[in-house]
Image (cartoon, rainbow, N blue to C red):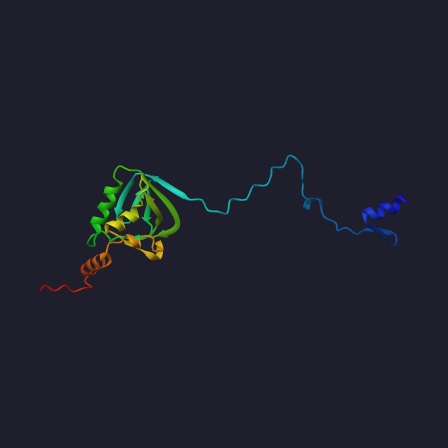
Amino acid sequence: MFKLIMRVLVGSRRQGNARQSTRAHVPRWKTPDHSPWRAPAPERPDPKPTLRTITGKCYVIDGDTIVISKTKIRIAGIDAPELEHPWGKKSKYAVVRMCKGKVVTAVLGEDLSYDRLVAECFLPDGTDIAAELVRQGLALDWPKFSGGKYKHLEPEGVRKRLWRASARQQGRMKVYDT
């Protein structure tokens, strides 16, 4: 009776003179070791990306580029005139006036633009630097990257003024004295 019970529990059967197990043989090295001395498996990282920020005083390069802690940052969602274009220096010095003596917080995105990290930049009082530049008419909303976030802040005629000034300087537009 004992042999019959063991055969049922263990699952062996007779084939000729040899016994053969119906269970698949698993080598010991493939079986999980649940001994207490093993360290637990590391937890999976959180799939949600965390917001990375850089905080510090900034150095202004132009209207849409600043440096914080030796990191070049492009202000996200706007297009400011280059320094050599008309309104370029005004745009730069508007950022200088806004940031002078203040700690700027840059919330980094995942994009790069000409070896610059792209970030939304804020002053300690929560002012969005990009929004303020657009409101002053010294930068344009860049809908491709902002999704039109700053479009409502643009003063009337600012696109024509900034584009025309840039085209005139680059020789693409004739200006006639009348």
